[in-house]
Length: 96
Image (tube, rainbow, N blue to C red; front, side, top):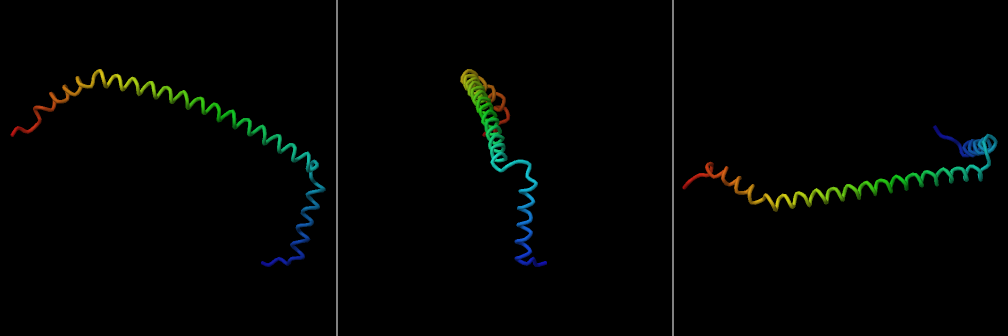
């Protein structure tokens, strides 16, 4: 279906006129309201991002502490566990 240019221009103009006549408030009021809502949303997103950053920093600290505990435990019990493992596997090893 082809639409002629004059019909398209008339339809566009009718839409613009209807929009102007039926608009609930003036353009500058609408822009001001939209900008205010956008600023509020941005502020909310910044707060969420800050809370997420704080939470991630806390998790990083916990992981570092846990890693340190594992490192210390490995240093203290490492040889003991290795000797136990060797003793358990020695009978299974082939003798030549």
